Image (tube, rainbow, N blue to C red; front, side, top):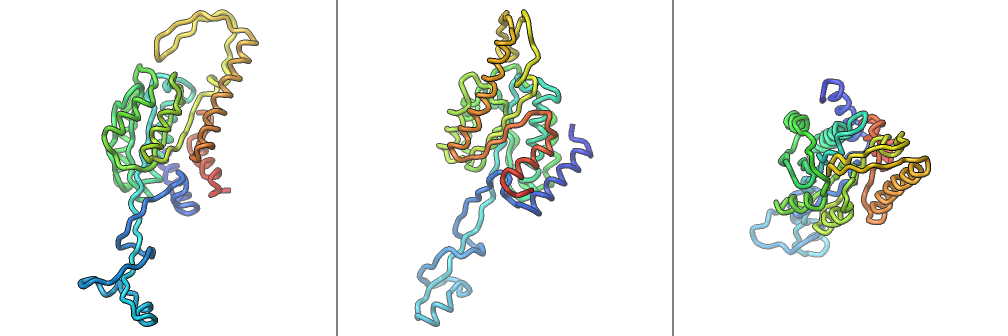
Amino acid sequence: MFDSEFMKKLEYLSLVSRRIFRGQLLAQKRTRQLGGGVEFADHRNYVHGDDLRYLDWNVYARLGSELVKRFEEEEDLHIYFFLDCSQSMSVGQPNKFDYARQITAALAYIALADLDRISVVAFADQVYDIFPLIRGKQHVLSLLRFLESLQTVAKTTDILTSVNGFLHRKQRTGLAVVISDLFDPAGFQKAVDTLRYRHFEPNIIQIHDTSEASPKLLGDLQLLDMETGFVRNVTISENVLRRYKQKFSDFLDLVKKYCISNGFSCTISTTAVPFDEMILRMMRETGSVR
């Protein structure tokens, strides 16, 4: 699924990201520590053995005080992509799971080009596989092989259990990008709140198929829940269909309002939008690309 045309699009997105808005696509916030960087932080008193190159000679000339400059250095940003592999992701034209993997690959490629560290967490009702942290574009082929090897599992979506399973591994904090349809019977909010409380910065990407938002179904039907196997006989009238569409719209509004109220980014997209256009839209929404 990651052919030469796909790779060309990744490189284009990476170039746009670096040239126009380096580091802001995922609301990037690097952690800082005192060290040998170039950005001044503060002073401290000189003690015997300190490197004289860091002595602030201007302060010494004016005040006679022996002060050493301290600098900030940036730590690598850690980005964790939570990729939904539940059975509901296997529907749609194009397939939601393929689309989610393309989005993951594109964002990971941009991050690797920016020398950040990335990891992919494949989940459904629990964590099923983890691609370990890597840094640098030289690892992109192993990442793509991992994504291509993934399959959806015949399980329900349980984001909270999956998040808790990830946190038990005691990962360093960073960005947590959740790429999912968010069709979790228990809701997605508590899982995302758990990430926030553990000092991760959530970013939500909700994807769905147009047929899920506006199905073309009428009459007496037997509906099968593909995650639980539950079957229900229903009669779908125009009124029922109208109410369903409103509920789906309300769900998307809930996702958007939840993210806005908590101050982190949210992207909602159908699979009908090509993945590279969706990434460019994310750039525009940050105000980085017009």
